[in-house]
Amino acid sequence: MLDLNPKLADLFRNFSGGIMSERERECIFRVGFCLGDHAPRPPEPLEQDEITSRWEGDTSSPLVSIKCNAYNHAGYIRDAINGFLMQRTTFPFEIIIHDDASTDGTDKIIYEYMERYPSIIRGVLQRENQYSQGKKPGIFTSHLVRGKYIAFCEGDDYWLDENKLQVQAEFLENNPDFSVCGHDACVIENGIVVRESKLPANQKFDFSAFDLQRGVYVLTLSAMFVNKLGEVPPEQSQVINGDDFFLSRLGEFGGSKFLPQIIPAVYRRHEGGVWSLVDDRKRKAHSINTQYWIMQYYSRKGNSRLATYFASKAAANIFSSLPSFSFQELFSLFIQLLKMFLIRKFSFLRNRSGK
Image 1 (tube, one colour):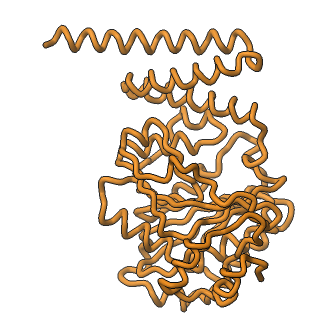
Image 2 (cartoon, rainbow, N blue to C red):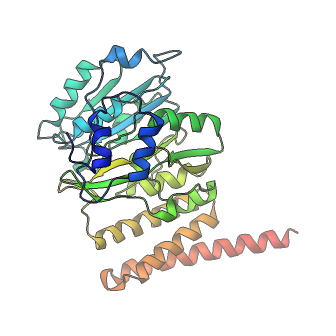
Image 3 (cartoon, helix red, strand yellow):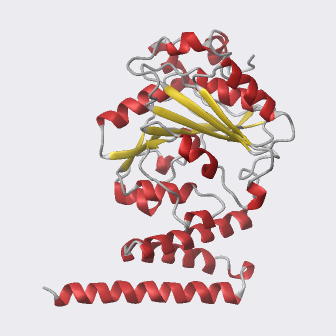
């Protein structure tokens, strides 16, 4: 299965879904995944009865809901689902998969797993592609979520730590001042590790609720968060990549926790990836668009401090990319920035006069 760093090869060769010992886990973190390694993959899953036999309490009421979006991931989706099913927990969890009318047989693979694990996996298999009509996957799966906590993973990424859900759920249960917790991931291309860590070093820390609102980089494929966000606000539906938006909103409910003890997940970079191969100019345009709509969201919510902050971030991004954007786009943002400044100034003066 593996052509991995020799010090890890034996470990993963015997990795068949059993709980790793502390020595084995320490080995992973001491050696790490090295550039050029063949990335490990999740083992074949146990049967449904074996998985659910570990669960305690009301097995029909999942504590965690795993959400997965797939589109033309036939070559990858088994790794994602196997990474979900390998989870060893004392609580029930559910898996909700949305397939957006794949044309490569991804839907057939998902259906195969649904039949094999009917008490764990539910799928929404579209007959017409919804993304091309401007509809996000969350529209079709949000009403199915029953868990107190939600974990995300796209259909082309996967997890490697069988204790991931247990560790994260226990942390959130015992630390209500946090709304989200995450961990690291390596990046692979054609099965080979091309980046040992996807998460920047300055983001491998715990952050306050206010830090999270202003923008903290929590890897979506690693995140578990409280199910408190409710309906997606209209401003969030205007952005291409909503990760920054939903993470900022989570800051309303608590801070973020980095859990280095969880084995890094695997982020797959490939030609069919929606985001991984987007060029720098488009990334910056998407980032400006996201910052603009987060600004509008906090403006509508009456939070002028955060609205002004995101207006300033968007303006800084635009000024650094002047050759790439039109005068009309720049002028529109300037008007919004001026408006936010005047609102903030008026609020400051009103507070001063009230003293």
